Amino acid sequence: MTVSVLIMILPVEYCLQFEYCSFEEHVPLSCYGNSIAVQYCKFGVRSGIRCYNVSKTTIQYSSLDESYIGVSNAAVIQYNDINGGNEEAGGIWVDTGTYTIRFNNIINTTEHAISNGNYYADTIYLYVDNNYIANCNGLIGVDTDGSQSEGVVYNSYRTTPVEEAGCGW
Image (cartoon, rainbow, N blue to C red; front, side):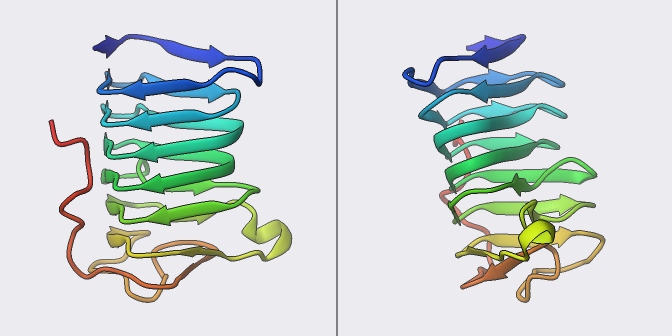
């Protein structure tokens, strides 16, 4: 399924699930509401996922090409393949909330691979696990110390890509 424009403004009681979707260039998926799942989706250049004020978000097994994931509140973000294409696009941005960010491949973005928007306000660190991060934030190579992210502590990291990440189609 190809979606040309999609902006959702939903009451809190609804649940949305996007599976096996393809979002063309410059067409972001913007979600507002409660309980949203995005899985097995492809996002073209300068598209991406924006989920704000959503209490339960799951984003998994998706592929993002020069695109990003931006989430506020609480989310599980796992098994995604994010390639920034050496542009400012790409990566994961999060704000206030509790997050599980694990088993993602994040590569080739000039910005931070994972950016914690809450870090500067409260110096609250975000702890992430088993992500493969390389060539981000103007640095070359695999990130093993958190220097390619912002306000993030790596509980563990990967030195090889996560094979299971991405949409697989």
